Length: 332
Ligand code: P6P
Image (cartoon, rainbow, N blue to C red; front, side):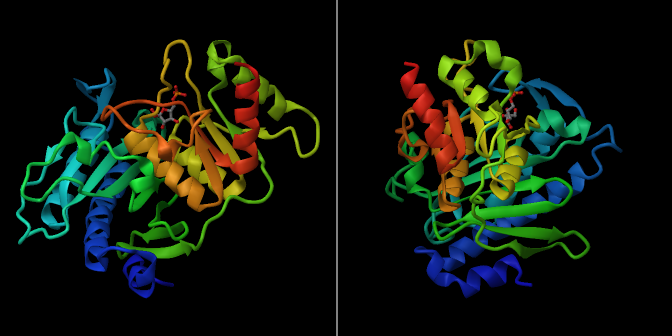
């Protein structure tokens, strides 16, 4: 039963950068996620933590109290570990600079994070999650951070992962050498290796999409949904969609399924954000033997232009994503 720290130390060759920096990053991520785990697991009990703050966030959405708590928990924990020089969060319009000189923080990593994705599910007790993405700083340490430090392609990520707060709290990550999951033992606050080298199963079983938007989908998506429902080969697939990307992705990774959030009339660029939702999940999907595209292009190759830009997102087993791309291509 390896702890996360022991696993990182036993697999030093899995990370081409500083192991000390990686341990500091995980120390920050573990601290914040344990604090969130504690609040999520009592959300039903205290008015203080459920419901909305009454503030509309930068995306015009109702900010939940736990969103705000989670955002602050990660900012504070990254600030205290001297490894991160800048953070972009779904909860903050602009990126946040952590001013520490090279002496105090020789690592200067960049983090992009969705502190609590799917938070509208908090009050109905459905799994929610944190999604994180880490890069090396591009600008010179002598200069101020620039937006270009954050607008890097997903194929430059050095670490990506999520924490799912569900029936158990599990941290799943990859540094480019496979995908590994660690389950929190809340009684002693330790993450233990529980899912070594996660891969999409050979057989596809599930498709995840909000079929309530069917009328608004492009024709290629409608064709793929009908394809999933056909009685042929190993189909029909099961429809599973809980409205929480981390929960849907985690189930699909373990059981074998595709997650789809296409563009619709109301979301012409799609709904999910490229930098702190799609890129990290695409990195994990590819490391688990899967594929992630926007219908035409590999997600990790998309050149970002805005911090909170959105993209259509298709992610799962290679065969399912490729089949969907074919339908999209033929329905141009
Ligand atoms: P819809 C949550 O708001 C989220 O960003 C993802 O976690 C989730 O998969 C999706 O949006 C749900 O969106 O439009 O189906 O409710």
